[in-house]
Length: 255
Ligand SMILES: NC(=O)c1ccc[n+]([C@@H]2O[C@H](COP(=O)([O-])OP(=O)(O)OC[C@H]3O[C@@H](n4cnc5c(N)ncnc54)[C@H](OP(=O)(O)O)[C@@H]3O)[C@@H](O)[C@H]2O)c1
Image (cartoon, rainbow, N blue to C red):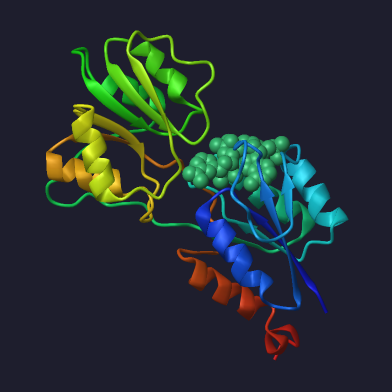
């Protein structure tokens, strides 16, 4: 019997999880991407792209495609799709599991300022002009037009379009992972004295946090949004084990 699994992805872990689950002959895995990135990296399993049309649309997809398990492996800041996933799973009567990568915790030497939104981050930078490294992706960079007194270095996977209406902004296109030594060199080269970051968690983008600590640079951290409480695991391995268990032949017989 084939078990149909839909993974809501857009993260490195989602891709790793998909590859891992696809090794099982009795699993048919599809990965779903929002379509935000112009040329996403190859995912290694069948992919569908684009929104579903809210929780209702996703519930219809789960029913139409006879999905047996929904896995939410989206980015911790993609709160809408996570909420939709939970609601859709309930409506369609499909089990849901979430891959929830833990956030970073501050350690000695970190100079973190915690805020709740990108808009709050823009005002937390203060009134005096600073050299700011924006590492929050392109979708919300526009919020920093409210603080045009700063000079910005803005890094994203795809170009920021339209560009920010501020007098001093430099754009850098790059896709992680980013090593700490490279991040440190970047911060020094551009004379950065503040970083704005999400609390993504994981290793791939931690380099800038460690580099900021070494250089004594302030990091304005945008807190994670609240996410629905569903059965979850913190790592690809732990989530894969949960999936294996769910479809374990013994468990399926109800023994
Ligand atoms: N790798 C990273 O660093 C990173 C960072 C940020 C975001 N992301 C990824 O980018 C995607 C979009 O982020 P967002 O901030 O736009 O999320 P969002 O605000 O939670 O989602 C907005 C809408 O985009 C659609 N959507 C989001 N994720 C989808 C998916 N995996 N498959 C199909 N449709 C999806 C849904 O549209 P409908 O309501 O029409 O279904 C959703 O309502 C997410 O998949 C997220 O994991 C990755």
